[in-house]
Length: 107
Image 1 (cartoon, one colour):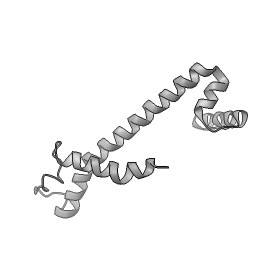
Image 2: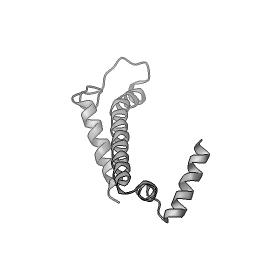
Image 3: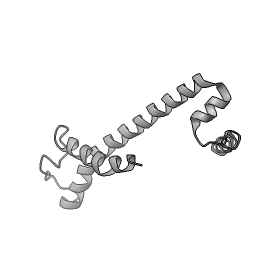
Image 4: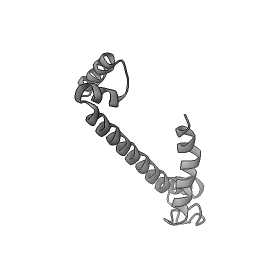
């Protein structure tokens, strides 16, 4: 299925002389489906970004704790770096957004 889907996308790109899903939808179904496709892609990409932020803010404190104290330690990191949902996780979400997502979104 993946191979067939990839071949269809390549065929659409050749026919439309474009690499955008919106152009594929416009050629195949018209301007209404082009808008639906564009909004669908925006919603899907926002969902991916939110899931990445959620994953990073929850996993980074565990990784740091494992490297510093060892995997079986009962010691805790300082609150700002720890896994507290209102301090540590917000800190790591901000760091990830500022140092990774923002620079990637500039181009």
